[in-house]
Image (cartoon, rainbow, N blue to C red):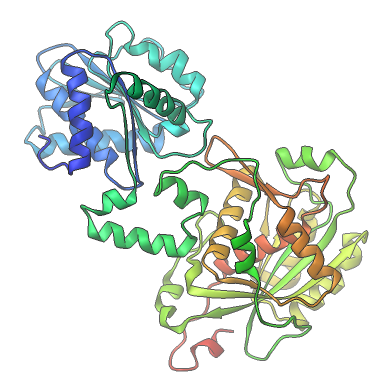
Length: 477
């Protein structure tokens, strides 16, 4: 039942089954690169243990950070593996979260902080899926005791995030225990190891590396399996160098070119910790518009036209070049005084095809006005912890892929402020696999930084009309 596993999967399975069969009660940590087969390994272990114990009233327990979709996906995978060996019609489903084979049961539970899981017992195996996203207190108080009376083997599966997660805590403990007794408890297989046995996988991940950069937090953690460290700079020296373009700043558009805008509004306070950060020190926010020219590669026109983009879905940044060409800044001016000028600049001067505007707090009426005046090309963007994290990930993707360039040095106050903010920007990673990026109020403002991030997001939302022939770039207007 394990003969189809890849060598690295079999290595893990052998260690887990040895602990189960000889009742060693070991705890394992397993890091496999995203889409590397950890869920398939888990399902095959579950099938084997249920089959070997179908005449005994024994249970295995598996928990996931959420019931829907993660727990449901795990249940479907086990059902499929049972059906693969002709057990359809033999296994049964109970209560919507239990799969029974004979007398043996697999119990699937949510590790959501509010879930009620107390009272379950794990005899055969206790599995913690996506352990990096499971609350440590929830695990310690409610899941770990499930296997205490039975000396149950425990397996934590996942990919790394930062050094504060449950998975990282278990991993570090296991590494220390390995040094003491020589028993391997931690297993780690990054995308290169997985790619040794799946060429198509390696090609696909290589495309992802080129798209977002190998030091992007998501690539770093999900494929290279290296933890991020919070509290550092948002952009490193290499990324800052990548941002520097050779084109000139422009005060007006060129005919036939595509222009986009990102608008950060003064006084539009963000949610979460940013509210707190902004309150630490008085600051005089500015309203900032960043204008960029969008350049497409005609070779990828079909992909562009058929691609799906949204603030929650990172855009395929390697398919276009975003050239920042102009900035506008107003400090201390009421939004209502800027309405006419905003409309004129965006509509009559630059003819912007997509405009992303901060609609958080006091920015909501401004965004509503612009949308009414300019139509569907205006997209309001509300800052939340989740949406801002996605905004930051997409900005990093554009930087790392070399597709975001800022006009060359020209000594203006706007240019100096933009680069000041880029150099001062910090990042703060959270346990839930999101992060915040900001300029500490004690250092200055982040209006240009946020405007730039909104601009990049607008590029992901712009959908060009289909074009034909050699004049593809010119016809997308």
